[in-house]
Image (cartoon, rainbow, N blue to C red; front, side, top):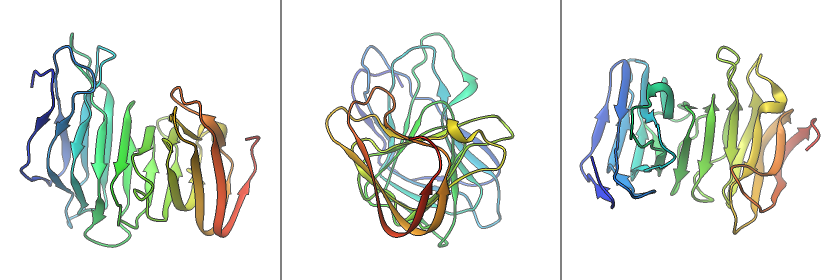
Length: 239
């Protein structure tokens, strides 16, 4: 797709089976021209391993790919924005992923985030499963995108780090943890916002967070606060 404006594909997209499904939105001269893909259902009850990915880019331009409603239908789903070692062709424009109104067919179904870009959650999330931020950024587009979800950071097998970008919103989480073997102080919670303060609201049981909570990620210049509305959150690093 070559465009300097926004493009919309309102039909539903259903992805099942095992393997990778790649989206490759290309653009002309415009940065941040969006590609809206309608509704997405991904995964299946058979437990197939499915990854929805966008290519890495050879330019600094970015065209967000947006799904208006997302349904997680299986327990082995990964969203990978700008997946390393895929793409990087001359003139290619990378794409972050925007997943609005995420729900799950079976309560408690988790999903994973990977890649070198950002997977954004927006709208109102009703899914209750954990989010595994194996690599890259999980970003918020609204204060209702998370639904008391547990967040697990890092991936020791690949030596990767995870970042939660609050983006000027309130993120309500039910648990925080770092996966075994991952470097604790490389797991980050912060904000890229240049206009609004952010809040991490812990609303869960008991968690110990050995990662870093800081004000700025990706050029943000606003503050990040922490509230505990339920349970107990123990911060062990120098934040």
